[in-house]
Structure formats: structure tokens, C-alpha cells
Length: 109
Image (cartoon, rainbow, N blue to C red; front, side, top):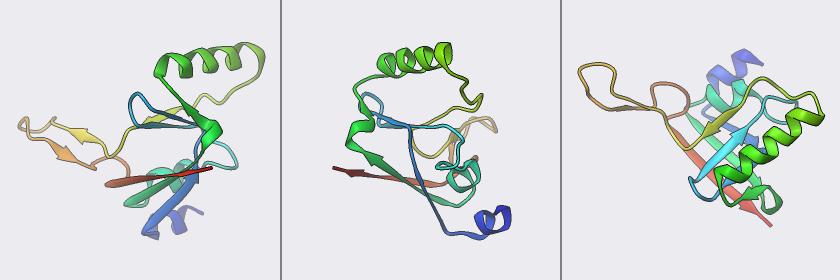
């Protein structure tokens, strides 16, 4: 799986939630969402069902807290709002240093 993810041009995964307020997607490692597939290829495509769309981060954190109290949850949580941005070196902004350089979302339903 690792070799295929590293050599792939595109990674396609589902998401747990998409947040309207920030245009972000929540990824939790599971059988449906692989960290390798989401973060290794240069392009990532999120597939979102309409029922997974939340209005705000407040609602997301309320749902995640509730889930943590009643069930065992993954310790991995990634809220992705697009390619990474870093200005660590010489205060120059560089995009896509960590993870995919391009991120797209398809909303179904």
C-alpha cells in the first residue's frame, strides 16, 4: 500500500465531515480513509456526502467530544483546508511542503 500511495498521482478518500465555515474536511484514519492515500500523493480528492456537511467548527468539536465520551475514537484527526503553507525559512511562504500540493472536493447528493 505504501509503495502505491507514494507513486500515485492522485489520492481519493472519503471524509468524516466537511465544514462550510472554513471549507475544511475532517479525516480520521480508518478502513475508509487512509492517511497514506490522503497525504502522500501530490493531489488529493475528498468525496463528501451531503449528510457529512457541518456549518461550523463549533458543531464539529461538539460532535467529536460527544463521540469521545461514548466510544473509543481514533487518536488521529486531520482537519484539511487545502495545501500546507509554511514560512519557516527566510519568511518566504511555500505551499504544499507537507501533504498534497492540490486538494479538491466533490459533494455528492
